[in-house]
Image (spheres, rainbow, N blue to C red):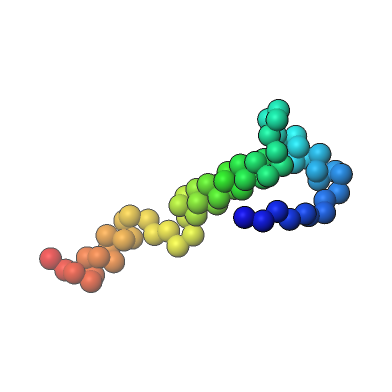
Length: 68
């Protein structure tokens, strides 16, 4: 894996550094932040009520499609 250089303002660099643990590289800090962000996105997706159908409505729809 190659190494690259990205330009950041000192303010942004300092903000990233504030998440670090003593001796941790910026690469390690950013990987940890990224991992947390992915977990948060997954949590928001799984807990979202977008497209949510209350159980009562789902039962009514199922009863219409597959009457007893």
